[in-house]
Length: 317
Image (tube, rainbow, N blue to C red):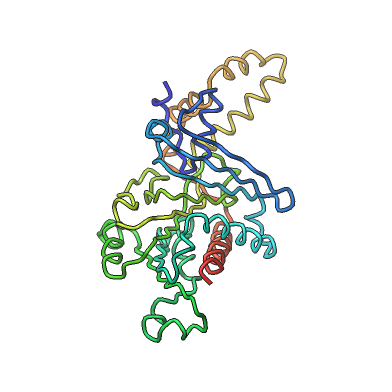
């Protein structure tokens, strides 16, 4: 029954929540949660430990850390600095700190011309790039005894280049031989409340465009030859999700009405996945393929991209 329904989301946390709402326990998947009351940051770690769990979740075996920060969409510099520091701490868990002077390739995925998809390119713009300086003048030119080689690429999208992103990255990896890749991309969420307020870190790589149903070849250690850490922020939600959330509010309102309570009870009998599929069937075919983003997305994406780039700059400083 579960496999029939597909709620579109890139967040492992939301996939896990979907099964919990249906009272289904996923074997081989471990969930850990913590909450920083002072910073108002909720950390959820989803560990997919078995292939069976990966098949059920629809995501590869690995660790997915989700930071939910409600004020991330607010222009508060102090708060964004705190988020950058927290993000740096979690990224450090995925990197071998015993290895000195390692080389990092940052890949800014997405289309710079489409604002909700421009997160990756914007992050690359704000990075402290060091590889060319170290290669030309040596690490002491940076004034430090230990310097990491940081390089970045914005490969664009297939419509712009005619090439799969993974093909471009493989070519760069072959020439520059980085120790690790950090890929940044915009994601799609199931819940509108998580738009521009959530950051997901995963050690499993990434599938560019998967959130909007535009599946491209995966960028993983298996496809490019080096470990890939993915950082993503949900910037869009599909139209069916918004209609579904509205229907949930309608059901709640119907249950409080004496005359229409029966209708609300009947609709409440559907589980979350069934309601979502019902909405997808009822809305116009034109709306079914539509994705929605907040009206202030221009400023928000630039602000969040700076927050992520600062975390990377601190990590590699």
